[in-house]
Image 1 (cartoon, rainbow, N blue to C red):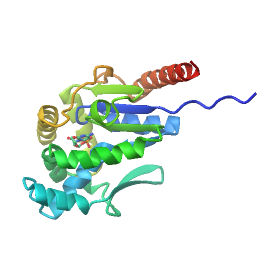
Image 2: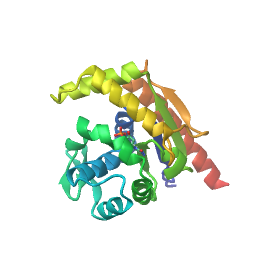
Image 3: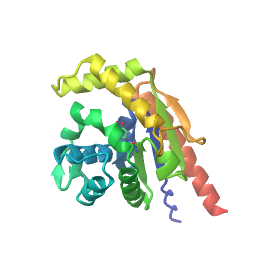
Image 4: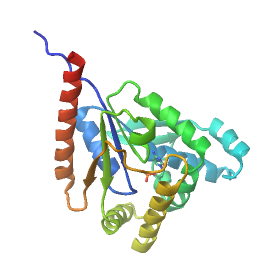
Length: 236
Ligand code: DC
């Protein structure tokens, strides 16, 4: 008798800036063969477009016109996720400090959020996806089968981001990075539209003292358990 295939689920990973959500999501997507959607990269790509085209963030008309001219996509090049803005690979550019400094204000704009959320829901409708961001478990997929809320201490987050930035030979000081992370956390969690907050049914993981492997092991066990539950309930 052939084995029934495992049901596919949606995994929502939310949390503060630079707490390793995307590393976890990428590792998990390789293990499970699931698609990975980096929703922060989408807000970053919009921000880059706005900055390059000097779009006035405060003008509803200018924002709506700009959004109509933006297409965001993802491609996998040699096993690595790359973000495309109107067909251009902007993966490196969107991670630079001048984009990081403007992305949270752009992400407070409701028209921007509506456009991004609609696209994310479409990308995830077939399930078998992992999305990381700030509002995935609360707004984008409130019925996701597994929701994680990731956190780590500000100094540990800063140190990890500082090492990443140095490895890319970009110039930012520890203090500059820390100030940017804390400012984004503040804007992201206090905005009126879909603020960053823990979904009531999310599993919280503080990874300050966890290795990537330890965290991945914990999450893989959670995924296994959720898939089992989904299988069980679909048989009823
Ligand atoms: O994950 P990240 O640091 O690359 O995200 C950049 C910014 O985008 C973050 O400071 C807030 C915003 N964002 C958001 O508002 N909602 C999401 N689902 C993902 C990111």
